[in-house]
Length: 360
Figure 1 (cartoon, rainbow, N blue to C red):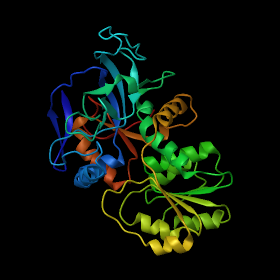
Figure 2 (figure 1 turned 60 degrees about the vertical axis):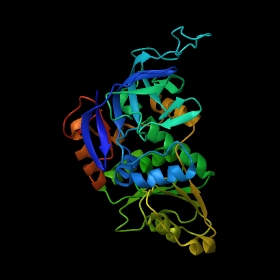
Figure 3 (figure 1 turned 180 degrees about the vertical axis):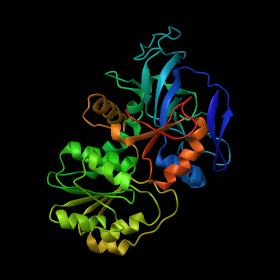
Figure 4 (figure 1 turned 45 degrees about the horizontal axis):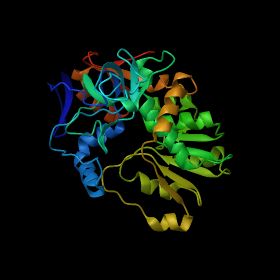
């Protein structure tokens, strides 16, 4: 089968071995897989991810020099249920919630004994930038309400936004500042709006992303080169307790957030910075800031996100700005690094060879 292989900071389209389902696996055909900011970071800084994984003794450890297939935001079609997935090969049989032909999403892990293999960050199993992949049947969720595969593929990044709000511990009357209006920043804005937060201020260098921030529910959107985001909050509010969400994930952003934040506010770090970084703790100490770091989501939040998208509680349509086939993925990575033309690009096997805008 074809896949987009990451090899020494380059992306190449190659034939790789077809995956074979083991006990409890489901073989799926990928219909759409989003390009995530962490995919961009991993391609450029995979060695840092491997170092952290090895140091923590987690399943994130992988060899950044060896080949791997990125992609962890997918919607896929069930092709085949492996042994132990309701086919009568084990007793008592497990009744599956899915069957061939179903569209499914899944948290991006594969169960192997007691291990969780992070799909998209593995040298042994392909992620979503491949024609086919293996999922754990027990972790698959059928896509409800006739939801299309493109919107369903946004379940994963939107779940990150939902979990970020849960970790933020928002209280009634809090105001929010969101720094960075990429997919995660926009997901945070969407959930803040759904929560009914009355003051949401967002900032981004990209004119397109600022427009999307307004569309997703931000009340005030600024270009930080013209007005710092916290200054914009002071202009439109300035009184409510503030929660500041950092959703950029590049060196220097944490220090800037600590410097800008008003005293006794909360900073929630959702941006994934893979490089070493520094900030000035004394400033945070003097201001008595609360600093929270968030990672991913739990399975219940993932399922709740899928339901919310399918039932129209949050509209992810504006986030999907383009699609591309395998041959255009490398160029799409380059375009997304500029962050001025696209937000969420979906990789679709058999899709256009060059990045193409989409209307849903």
